[in-house]
Amino acid sequence: MIHISQILTLYKKEGCKKQKAKCLVSGFLLFAFCLFITQVLAEEDTSQNPNYVFAVCHDVVDGDTIEVDILGMKKKLRLIGVNVGGKGLLEGIKRRFGMGSVGYLEKTVKGKKLYLEFEDKWTDSSGILRGYVHLKETGTFINLEMIKLRYASADRKGNYKHKKEFEKMDK
Image 1 (cartoon, rainbow, N blue to C red):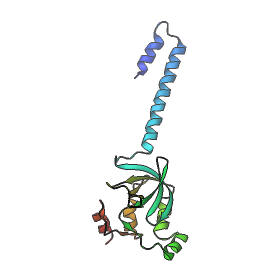
Image 2: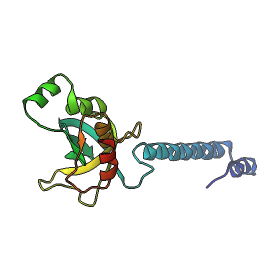
Image 3: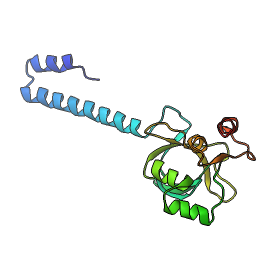
Image 4: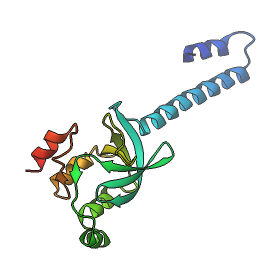
C-alpha cells in the first residue's frame, strides 16, 4: 500500500512533475474511498453471527409464514416453533383489521431487512423454508417475540433448537 510520505517523496524528487504527484494522490484517495464504500456495503447485509442469512420480507402469507427475498430469489418461509391457531374466518377478520399474528408480522417485518437462522433441515415436507427470523435493525427475535406478545403459542410437538426457550416464554 502506498503511504502518504512516499507520495510526498515522489513529489520532491527531481524529474517528478507536479501532475504525476496529483495523479497519485487522486488515485490513492479514490482507492481509499472504494475500500471504505466496499466495507460499508459489506457490513450492510452481514451479521456478526455467521449462521445468519440476510433477507428482505416482501409479504406476509399468513400468521406464521412470510415471503422473503434471499439473494434475488423469492421464497416462502414458515417460522419455526410458533403455532398461530386457525386460518379460517376469524383469522381473515383479524387480518382485515390488522390484528392478530398476521397484523403483527405485517407491521413488524414486511418490507424490513432480516437475518434468517436455519436448522439442519431447511425445508418442510412441502418445500417451504423453515427458519427463525431476526430483525436486522433491532435484533428482535420475531419467533420468540410472537410468543411473548401472545400472537402465537410455542409448538410443543416438534423438535427444534429453541424449544425450551419458547415453551418457557409461553407459560
